[in-house]
Length: 192
Image (cartoon, rainbow, N blue to C red; front, side, top):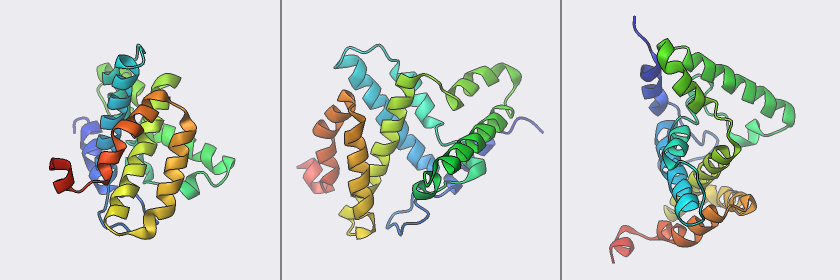
C-alpha cells in the first residue's frame, strides 16, 4: 500500500478556510499554508538580517508550511469557535496533536523524526514567528476581500490588525510598515 503522508498533504487543497464568512475568493489551507510559510520566512530573515537574530529562516518556513496539516483530519475550525473558551481551545489542541501524530505515523520510520519536529515544534521563537505569519496571512486575506468590495471582512480586518500590533515583534512591525501598504494597491499601481 505504501506510505500515505504526502497523499494526505496533497489533500490540504480540499479543506476550505473562512467557513463562517462569505468570500469573494475562496481560500483553502494549502494556499494559506504556502502564504504563511512565505511570510514566516520573511519575518525570520528580517529578524536575522535586520535585527541580529540567529534564527534559521528555512526551518521557520518549513514549520509554517506544515502548521495546518493536522486540519486534513480535523477540518478548519472557525476562530470564534476554537477560542470560545479555554476548555474548547485545550480540547482542540489535543485533537490537533493527535492528528499530527497520526500524520507522522504515515511516514517511514527514518523520516518520522524530521517531520515530527515540524508538526510538533516547541521552540517559542519559531512558534512566535509562525503565529505572527499566520495572523498576518489572515489580515492579508481580509484586505484582499475588502479591496474586492466585500465588507463581510471589515471587522475581521480590524481584529487581525489589533492582534498583529499586540505581538510587539520588531520584525512584524517592520514588515507591516515596509510591505503592507503595497497589498492595498491594484496591479497597475504596483507596476507604476
